Structures are given as C-alpha cells and as structure tokens.
Length: 295
Image 1: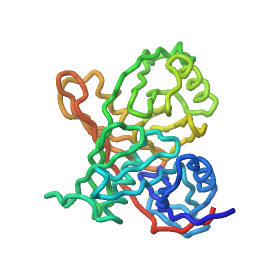
Image 2: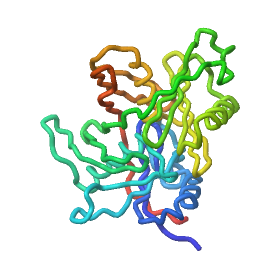
Image 3: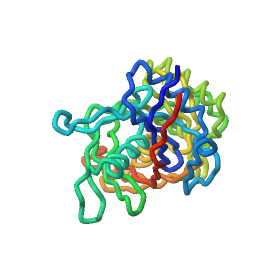
Image 4: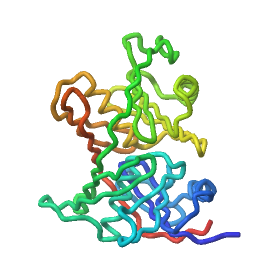
C-alpha cells in the first residue's frame, strides 16, 4: 500500500537532507527513510541546487519534522531517522522554520534568531538564519568528553608515522574520531569503528573525519539504522575537528574552515577557563520546494 508524504530536500553544504513534513510514527522512520533514500530527486522531481550542481540529487539522510503548536510546545522540534544528532539537519530545520513558517526574531544584521529542539541533544539550540545570503548558523553541543587513541590501537600507525595521538570528540548524540594524514576507505572505517565500539560501548552514531591536506572526508555510521555514509559534508564532524584543532590553544575565539567533498563549513570555537565555552557552525544552505512523494 502506497501513501503520499510531503518532503523538502535541503542542501546544507552538500550534505543532502530529506525533510519529512508529514507526521510519521517513530516505528515507521526507517522504512520511510529507506524508500526516500532510493529516490533521485533531481531526475524524478527536477530538484536543482547551486552547488554542487548536478542532475542527480540523492539524499544522504532523513529528518522528520514533528507537529508544532506554539501554544502547547515550547520549541519546534525534529527527529533524525536514527534519533541521532546532526548539525546540518539542525541547520536545515532552522532554515525551514524561518523560510516556511515565519519563525525567528529579526536581528540588526538582518538574520533571524530562533531556538529549536533536535534529536540527540537534550537542550534547545540557538540558530541564526540569513535568507538573503542563503546561510544558517547553529549553536553546537559542547563536548561531553575527549578521548585519546594511539594510532597503534587503531591499526593505522604505519600509514602516518608522524601521527602520535588521535582524539575522539564525544558530542551529544554522536562521537567523531579525527584522523590526519590517513586516507579514507570503507574497510579502514569499518575496522576503526569495530575497535572503537568494542572499547567505548554502543554509541548512537560514530564518525571518522579523515583530514588530508585541505580536504576533510566525513564518514558516519548510525547504529539504529545500521547505515554508513561517505557524506558530502558533516556539521558535527566539522565541530569535532574544530574542537580538536583548538585543543592545545589558549583562551580566545578561534575560527576554522573545513573544505569537504561537496561544500565548506565554518566553525567558531570560544575557549574560556581552558575549556570549550561555545561552538557555532555556519555554512550555505538551499531548500527545494515542497514535494509530494508516493512511497
């Protein structure tokens, strides 16, 4: 039996995200997501984005917009398919709430400020949406823990002899290992993932950010839907990479930019009292029109 659902396809720095507007039971998330991820929205529905420009538009992840009643609900909310946290999906949701729902308090800069609630994070996040410049900035969770690994533990010591320590940044809803000078391959990711899960337990989601030269390749595994993606860009991975880059720095404000296969994301890290006070994640964002899909 088929049914119609309304979706919007978002392009947050190339990390193509399908936003499900039709109310959906959590028990149906995986089935709906699997079907949506099979659709080429470029070829079947004519969706086009500025960058990366392509006739093919395939989703990398799916988020579900929860019904919102301003009188009854404190914040507009969304869930990822695996109930994990995703920064790019959070940016997309914030942009949707401003562009389609009229949310947000106008700022002197012309941006609109709002708060949203997203899966994998137990407190509301503040977002700034700039429709004129097609960008969205969102507050990111601060690290719960920073866990060091040796290259020997991960089985990669021979690939980059200069690499002494690798840091895993544990964020709300997802953890990312930052690797520099190591090439990204599916076999390598699986080997590292299996070791980290054995040592640290079953995380909701896990990623490895492979940084080589000026390119960062994000690879992310989501436990509850058992999927691994080489993503176009990754917001939480960018956050983790920025935290790792700022780890040994003194108190201050540090700006980092990470070029990824399908787009660039920027992170601003504020350090006080020798710790991370706040992180903001910014980047370009495009939305399609609302599309009615039969699945």
